[in-house]
Length: 66
Image 1 (spheres, rainbow, N blue to C red):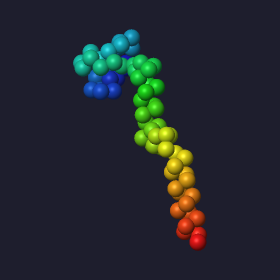
Image 2: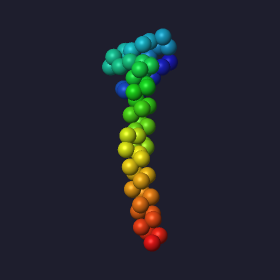
Image 3: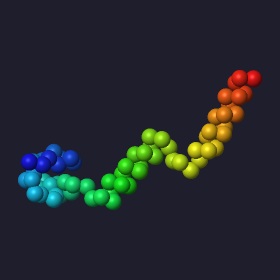
Image 4: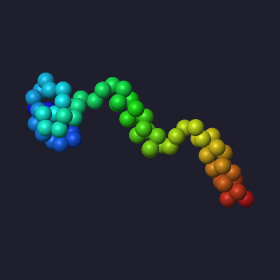
């Protein structure tokens, strides 16, 4: 038995969509890649400005030492 992650309904092993709500039971490969990238950005922040953060953080540490 496969359980739906959206509504929790029981589905047969070979089912592609939920019999109750119609949600896909197995995520597509492209959806998974976008989802993991989004979760990574939420945890660590976007990578575009990481050098500025390191630079400003270094200045703050040196200012605190002096």
